[in-house]
Length: 186
Image (cartoon, rainbow, N blue to C red; front, side):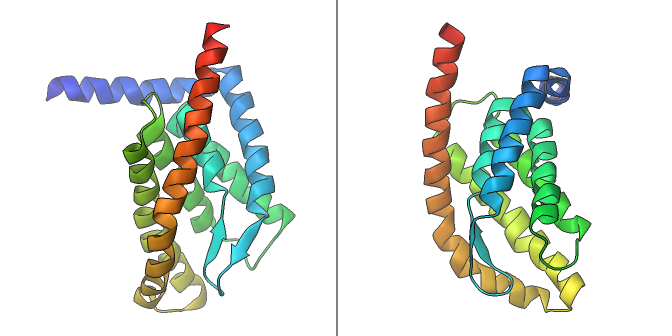
């Protein structure tokens, strides 16, 4: 048990040390810029739902640079995305959600072999923690809508999106894994 605590401490320390690497900051910044561009392209499904592909940059950032860099990169994407294309009032809760998504993807994917189940688990954790719990909470605070109604409205969409997003993330990570191996060899 104590050994796992040390392993967790080393993992967290390694994730924090990624912030000192110029390559991690530069790579996270490039993925954040790509994320801002992708975030602007989405499919609206009513007032409180949308389909977006911005999660792919958060997942890739988490895989390559760890949870801390991915969390901060996702925050940058959220803030710059709002500044470029504002919709409604700015609310820090959504920026926190973006940070949490980066942390989730980084915890599931960083320094781990790419596996379909891991992509599924990362997307599933993100959907449950952010899409089902926090997003409806923030929307109910902002607009006074019923939290449970917002959660129930998201179930069908996210049930369909979970396998699709997981497969897209898995495919992207496989390409990144191959590119990473070739880069290390050369």
